[in-house]
Amino acid sequence: MAKALLGYVGGSDPRLLAEMRRLQQRVQDLESELVRIQAENDALAAAASHHDRIMESVDAHQAEPALT
Image (tube, rainbow, N blue to C red):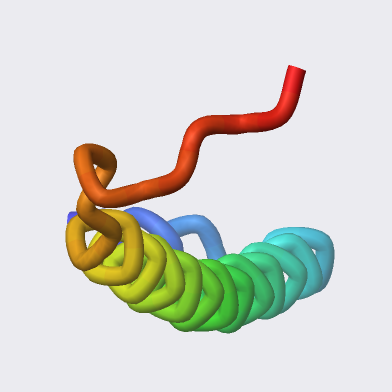
């Protein structure tokens, strides 16, 4: 319907086209940032999992007491 309305009023407004291009670029930027953040999150989750496995392997009952 929007295309029909634009065609009816005489074509695309250059300001509208510029805004559409700007918004498309913003969407691409946000998608790239999302991919980067997801990769960072995956790396942090893997590091946390590794840390948890190390901590689970430590037997607190066998550990020597801390010096006071």
